[in-house]
Amino acid sequence: MNAPAALFREPPPTASGQRQTILHLLREAAKSNRGVSGDTLRFQHNIRQAPTRIFELRNDLGYDIRTEQDRATRCASYFFVSDPPPNWKPPAKQGRFRLSTSFEQRRRREEAEAMPLFAGGAS
Image 1 (cartoon, rainbow, N blue to C red):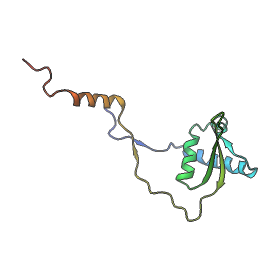
Image 2 (cartoon, rainbow, N blue to C red; image 1 turned 60 degrees about the vertical axis):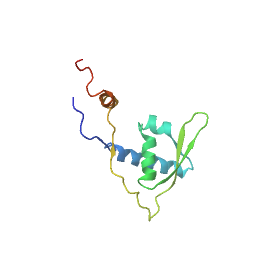
Image 3 (cartoon, one colour; image 1 turned 60 degrees about the horizontal axis):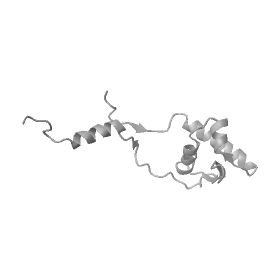
Image 4 (cartoon, helix red, strand yellow; image 1 turned 90 degrees about the horizontal axis):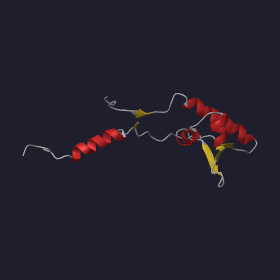
């Protein structure tokens, strides 16, 4: 089985909707000076990649979102601080992230490189 020549990591099609849901929840909670817990996003709204979506809202879209972590439970809570500034520009993209080859492919390549050129030849 041949591996694809190049695999690229891109956000799933649902990422935009998840970001909008998170942003709506954060803004609603901010009205009463509260935050939204990671558990709420994960279990009530089925957004398992909430930390990634928060990262995208901050770094790709410029929203100011504060994170606090409870020391006892290690559960993160997110707090909406502000919208992106009017002059904010997203950072330059460095291209797509290339997925590394699988562990098995790397192991085979390393084994092949470690073999002597004429291993098991006639004596």
